[in-house]
Length: 317
Image (tube, rainbow, N blue to C red; front, top):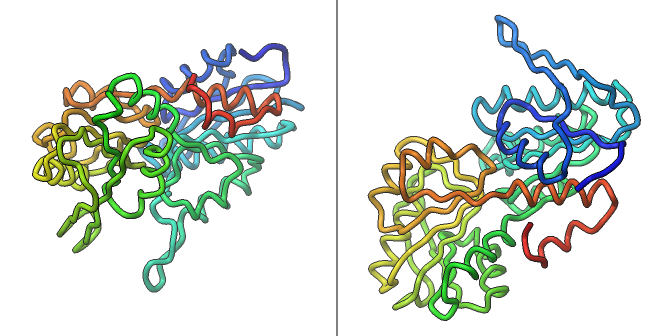
């Protein structure tokens, strides 16, 4: 819990529930800020309390109308900057445009870098975000975090580790999955997948042994859930007794919930970097893992100059 003055925490409109959880964790009320929109869609921000020489944290995530949330965040940062805040940190659990992280074809933009530049130019000193989609864009940020400690705690308390194998749904997530498998002391497997086009997998090949094991798929993001559900089907064919999936960012667009409901997955466990109440109500296989307390602890440690990296090696809060 934070005590004394010198810190203010504000929230945008994208995910107020998570902001409240974070505020409760650090023992401070959310700062008084008003966000309104004009008839033509322009965003107006009014900060109703002094931030002069304060350590300011602004919580907003990339969900809902993403472009509106991003502009809202930049304006809030700018408002605090010109009001003489000492330091401004943006807390963005799901970083917008993280999947546009490289120039993969002619004349393609690197939009993740553009967004990072926008936030920096607004006056932001640091960024706290969760499980960036690609490791190379970690270089854009000061405090990239991982949901890994929370996932590890869940697995240890809900499964017999002798029966578990950690599975990556693609080669790109192999590092994340092997890190979790190593810390749990369990086996690891991965899928090699080929795509015809974005969000459409043509073929998946399992590398590793999952026979008579509980297979736990881990990934940073679930959008249409086609890959996860296809992987779960292949795991069943390969002899896995049950299949679960852990995902940091549950976007769950289109027919994702119906796909999950009809799949062989026992559960899809997602964190609350995005609001999940409606998804839980619509699909009984969705379970939510709260990362608000972890983010709150990161803010506390950041404010007092304590180590954030130790969180990766301690029991989650």
